[in-house]
Length: 404
Image 1 (spheres, helix red, strand yellow):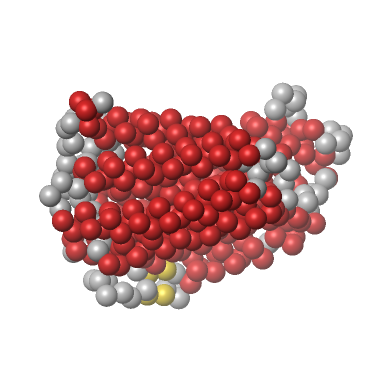
Image 2 (cartoon, rainbow, N blue to C red; image 1 turned 180 degrees about the horizontal axis):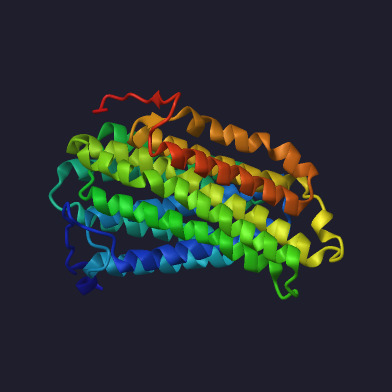
């Protein structure tokens, strides 16, 4: 054991890139995302959507802290690799018990909480080692350790008590944890060693998460025979996913360049805002979109095969479908506001426009609702492609203390 903790830690440099080992970590994370979708699709309702959101936030924190760690020290070497492997195993356990953590049995809840605590403890130990002689970073870690420990109190209590109070206590735990990261950032700051690594890691996880939408197609079909409406719904899903990918990637290079140009003392703050914070609604949006797609295709595949194309979605499924895209577009607007500090009027209004389609999507047949959403994102991509990145009438500048 002592030999493991004496293993070398290799600091990263400005030219550091994402490692294949980190991408492997992402695959475990995406498996957990799939389990969240599976849980919500088993009984789609307002409560299950909120419960899925809480677990998603826990997983996002687990992913984010290791993305920062991998920016400080190589994730595929020595002690950091050993610790990241332990964290991957813990996240895998979390994923396995997700469908049962809101049930009456306390076992799955305690497994999730204990595994999550292991993920966070290992991260704090590794970050302390990776900090080396950086006294400022050590101070940041001490502040963050205190607030992280405080957040575990309501987390554990929620797991023990269960029932209706569990959701409230876990929400409190998340609020304390997120606030702790913000306080540590404001009081001491998180240094960023490689802007290129950080932007690449987040771009990759968005792409992998978008793949969850395509996976939901297969989950919705199951073993049923493929029919015309199902094939059409699958192709529409592919078009939506491609468009969302386009809407993100077309401006990601400019955002990465903006982070690179930022003076080093302010890089950490910009990275926290534009990537750690703004990328969460991007990920959450893809998960809810995947749920909505699953419900559409599940209806086509299993409910009244002869007239399934005319079956309407329930409110929660329609909200997941259109709300997921709206959440994704809102995250993209936040991302651009924080990174390139300019958002067009269309980019600001796009989330509201997606939500405005929700009533029509609810009263249209599921397949028609999916077609309506597809038409919306295709038009949005076509309009923005004609303008080019960060151009267009009604551009709104988001000024900060940094360079514009």
